[in-house]
Image 1 (tube, each protein chain N blue to C red):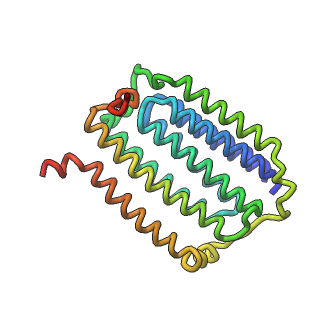
Image 2: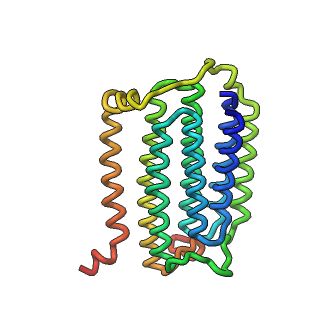
Image 3: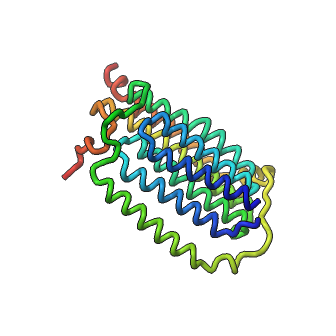
Length: 168
Length: 103
């Protein structure tokens, strides 16, 4: 289990680093898919099998394809940036912020006292139990989520088709 | 369960920093959104690790992660629609060139 954690973590981190550093946008999305698969494998390792399935269906299946479509619609399919600069104007400020935040989080986590307070053993939740609480205790947030997703769907179409609608 | 909880927290913090670094320093707006997705996933991994290590050992803990994933999906759909709208307006997705709101 220990080895699995390290292997999956390495794959996940490599995927994330490549997704943020490669020049070709399509390659970036492929690396992002690797990262999503790594996260899904982490969920399976943590026995959250439903979340792992959701991760693969939703992120690998939907979000990655959505990003690919956005690249196709904005970059003339190939997605290469060629010899152009890939970093923005104040990139050093962004990287500095990321390094400082990573350092702060590391310092906090390294000296945390949480592990001593946790009960021993591991939690287990079956998919049936998740479904049970979803339609009993959390039914109102569940319905609100449906409204939110519908609003997001309509909003995305309206924003993306703005010019088309105006022309009619 | 041999791995302590803090390993997951450190992995998650590291992934968050990678995503933040990409989102703040890359030029292309689509890559900025990809960085935000990485940060989202790092945060949700935290929630799942907390559930597994019994900080909140109820089914509701996983539901929190599911709701976070649903909101992230809505966010990415809207964000990419905005990128397409911006591309139509400026013929570019370079975040340095989109400066209408700059003071």
